[in-house]
Image (tube, rainbow, N blue to C red):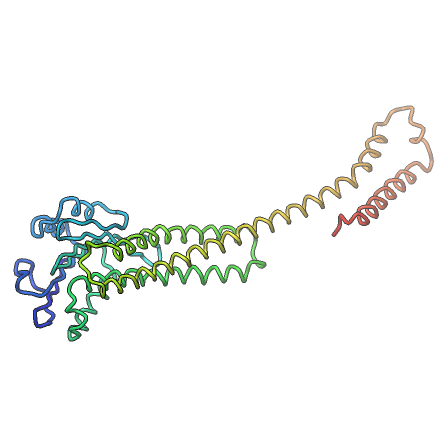
Length: 319
């Protein structure tokens, strides 16, 4: 589906204008949104708008890294949107010209719908929309970045809950949850860090059609991405600390088990030796014919075991 918005020179908002009737000289600026387009609609990027073939190729062959390319009087942005549940990345491509913005995305996105509705609802605010398509591009980028926060907040909530119930679950289950959180944080990092670098380039670029006032808004998005990056790094450090703590806890438990088994084995070693000697059943073994031999051997074995337990306790092996 292709949808259009045109802002007239009197700051009126018109929607649903066919592409063939959109003449740049008739409007102050326009936004054309390729919203989950069909192959035939995607071809209009070349046949109608005559965008650079490399930019069109980046649109049709997903998934590209967030970037900014300059083509004469046109800037081409590759942005990333996140699906909140799966953290899958959806590419959003933006073409920005003097009085035109074209967005292209293969899936329907709530962020683009919100930006679209905001233009319509604030049509009366000339101060905002008289700034042109750069302001519209900022609005789209801001909506995309704002959608990153809920996904990260969800992970932080799960991380806090994981810390609180650390003593009530097995180490194996806790480790699996920690590695799952680290994997999701890595997915977020792979999206947010390139977006941060892109926004830094936009703020410091001399090619983007933006004045100082516009760059203040882009700098605000850059600050949000810096905050997200810091939060991700802090969460990754916390998961690393939890992982190390669980590994240490598991090692301590294993050491305790090994110590217990070692004590038991050490106690039974001399008892097994005695039982082995008198279990050989040789003919010339005087103790076998002794009347009190059985009781004496049991007493000896009990005394050895009791003495070793007392000695191990004094050595602190049972602490």
